[in-house]
Length: 560
Image (cartoon, rainbow, N blue to C red; front, side, top):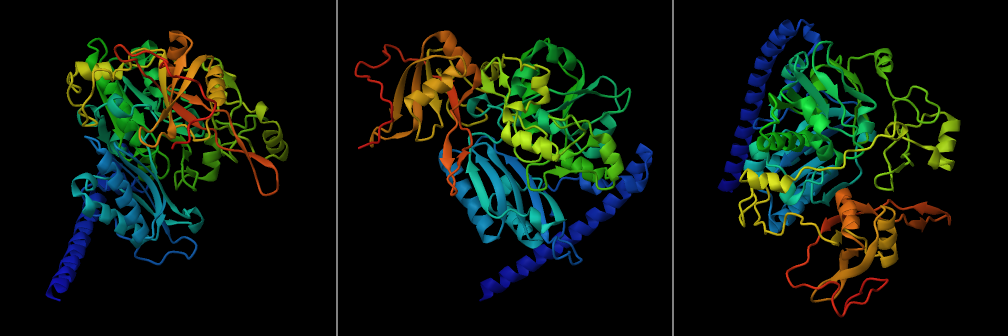
């Protein structure tokens, strides 16, 4: 009984301390907003310095003190947290279970990605429940989650609330194909975080470039537009995030960044963490390629637009990956937003900036032989919607219209880390915390390891998938569990030539043939196209391939 009473007293004391801390923070922010507005020469109502501040290592903003409308009683939270060294397999599994348990207990819905390198989530719940979840994470692992910037927005319409909670187990938080030992170290190479007012000032400076590290279809509806005489905007023209390392490694890109202050931005900041670290690792290992510094905006575009509610140097809308779909400066008029639109319908070319439906580019990329599949804008005109549904082969994205090809040479990230001592010879990788074998540097081989395959895969489907990439497979060898002899989604593909293997490995993945399934009305519907990961699998010394007992089977083994 006495123990329960002490717990109540401690909880009350903690609540009072947080309340006093928030009051002190508000007083300081009011004074800072006034001085910053004066310095920038703008009205105090045009800036909210408090919105630029991270919630890391401090109490979260209090729930709304006034009652919210009945149809807007939802709070949304965006956050990410990297872990370096990465979680072990056992710790990763425990993290998945714990986060799911806390979300269920606190009635939190949404979706997230949990990788050995950390956690990335977009969540919805009632205001108090979502804050309780965030504090529960901090209590579970204070060293990891106290420094987390939980970005909260109250008063969100209930229609934007997620129905369920889904946490995916993944290898990488952002699809740069920089998972495992290829990941650059954030502890050593991450860029500097600038709060929105300082980021705003930096865009006014000469000898500065600003890079949009989002995908091209996101940039199409909104991007930063630095003032005349200030920073130069660079668009990497990425179809997917996997294009970024290749773009950054291109000689023409390095020439544009050389001896400049490099600014980067993305939706919420997570993509900039790895992107800035990648650039700093490259400049660290290449003496002739240096910058004057690499920075990112703290909290991403999301925090910048809340700090500058009239837009600041932002033009257009911020593409979002939750049910809101987009974010616009709260004090910018509809007329001003319409004047910002640079994108258009891919069919009728009318000015338009909304992604309606899930229409994608059907053009074929010559270098890979694969469909582009970049989301495209189709306006709400009935004729355009009909064409998009009945003749999807006519949908072409702006990159394919211009014939843009992504640079094809990625940096040797593992080799760079070895040179910098981040991977000791036969030692421990600083990022993953795992021991790296000498064979982990992706030595060229005709044999490829192909993983993340659906259990319905067949040899014919694999042959076709590689043929679509202009690569020929000589043989398919199913990888099975030693005990059960069952197939769990991996194969060895022996390619017809080293050149075929190199072309496939350079892509990093192959797209499997699309499958169809019947709906209740008897009509067929396309299932989401799956992608399988590809990596070199060099033969061991004295190993013969295929094995003497090998006989190619069309279907994978079912096990004993």
